[in-house]
Length: 233
Image 1 (cartoon, rainbow, N blue to C red):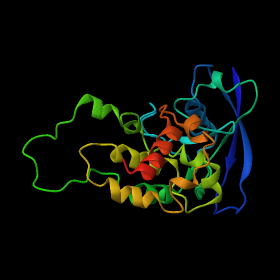
Image 2: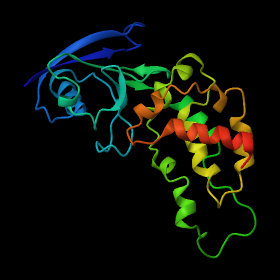
Image 3: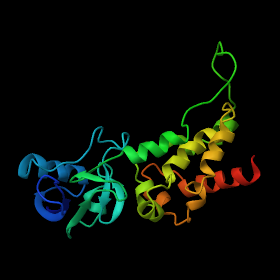
């Protein structure tokens, strides 16, 4: 079948304005949007720029807005986005666009790093692994699935309008350790997230949950962190 892919192009070396450009490719309904982008880049216009790596929904590098929704191009089938109409593809919102579909991820990673996304412990280094029950592990299992694609954070209206907001992913990253029984940095993380640009900026629109390609209940995790702040576990 013939598919029209309408891409928002931006090249700061050419113009300060982004413009829409349409491309026509032949594809199968079961092809992915990433396949269509490859055909554009490899066969029609080699200047098209976008990120991708594993192409299996694991690395999270090809997050973009497809038909107005944040998705991974490698997991989005053409048949699921109405290939009879032009398929619009644009960069995720809220982060500076470097070129075409590539955004500057540094502000996103800065927020992630600020919540201390690592195990904090004291005392001597253990001689064996830190034992944890399955029940304790299940408490934060959902938020371990994050692949840092930024789909949740860049689907958040608050993040679009407030560049200082930590964003959903940073809170998810903190949640994974806040509820880990082996960790001793909970109070520090909760204080960080108690900031005016922390969890209290969330407006519970559920955009983040809908955008997550891994099915993480992002909004639920944010609410759990809010409760942890109120009751301090």
